[in-house]
Every structure is written in structure tokens, then in C-alpha cells.
Amino acid sequence: MNCTVSLPAGIVLNDSTSTKILDACDGRLRYTVSLATGTVYLKEQATATDNDKKGIVLVGPTVFKIDHENVHGGELCAIADSGTPTVFVTEVY
Image (cartoon, rainbow, N blue to C red; front, side, top):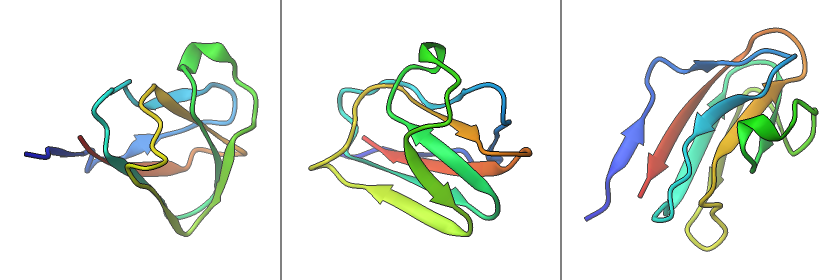
């Protein structure tokens, strides 16, 4: 049985500090990150690694999906290019 976890309130990012958007999960099958406005960098690494603006660039409005064949099971974080955009995350494991 698969479980789906959504964060309906969203996660507010900023442009100076990386923010964790998903905990590590060995059984992760897929995840989706939605962004209405702004530009964010999605990073497949622990939040404490750095605050660099690098990774998968998402430019809103967009929905980014990764399925089970390519999914990263470690912690995921994100940082805004500027401002304080909000991302909405859904995870299936």
C-alpha cells in the first residue's frame, strides 16, 4: 500500500537560507513540487550542506515531478532566487 503525504499549507522559502522540503525516505516512490510564482533551486542534499543557489531550477508557474525510477531518497531542500516564494510538496512512499 502506498502512502501519500501532502503539505497543503506550503513551505515558504527565502533567498538566503536553504529550507528542508522533504525528509530522507528510503521508500520514496515519487514526489511533486508545485510553484506558482518566482524562481527556486531544488537541491537533492541535506539542508545543512550549503546555501548555494544551485540544483534543479524551477520557474513558476510550474509543477515538477520525479517518479520511482529516478527518485532521490535523501533529504531535499530548496532556496529561492529572490523573495519568499511558497512551494507545495506531495510525496508518495
